[in-house]
Length: 189
Length: 168
Image (tube, rainbow over all chains, first blue to last red; front, side, top):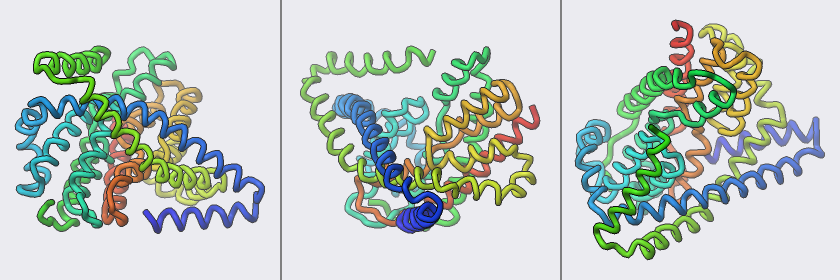
């Protein structure tokens, strides 16, 4: 991330200095403004979901979800790479991802990674696998796109569900295989 | 169906806490207070990412990149409008959504291009934004193999999406 950010920003700003120097600072302010706006939106949604999630944690739901999903988790992450607390977060985050509950799944994903990483400063096998799976889009209902299609007057916005599911399943499987080949499996903490 | 999903889910959680006699208010506020620290930790990362995206857009680097790599896309029978979407998607959710609605307006919602675009949008995620947010609460600085692997996997998924549309 460090390298990408530095290289991209340097190249862009040097080009802008030549072609459009007055635009550099205003556009940076503009971007920051957007970021702050977004963080307020996120705050609202995380507050709701983390609040509800705290209640869920007091019930037996995490244990039950973990039991249901554990064969799948073992298949993907291998045995003994994930401790019990992480397993609870992971299974809840997986279920909310599959349901496509936007804010909830992001909030839970952050919690999962926090728990997987602990105090370590390096990415491990489990984190890599988790982020790759999320990035390749394990979502059953692409709600945003369906809403947009419907608002544009499409009569059958549901038509994209199955093709998207096929495409994202294929990319997720490829992602899982690549991680299994290229990333060394350490013991999880 | 999905209309009722979230209200029922929330209702179910509240019912459970009645049933289990939990001090729901206390627990909820405790959880919600975590959101404030989370957002403060995320904000600097969001700002940095948004700066990079804005710079990419206004400096014309993105456009330059798209026109220079055209022959690759022609080979996979990916229309030009879609290329922009594929490249922008890992960086910016709102940006790619804007391109998507432009495509709908220009080509209608039922054309080959529109179908391709919808499926690509529906089957991939905004990688760089996601990584910035996900790692903001950890001490991890180097994300290792995550970015290349995700990009390759998403790219193959996008090509598959176009092929599916080509077949139907």
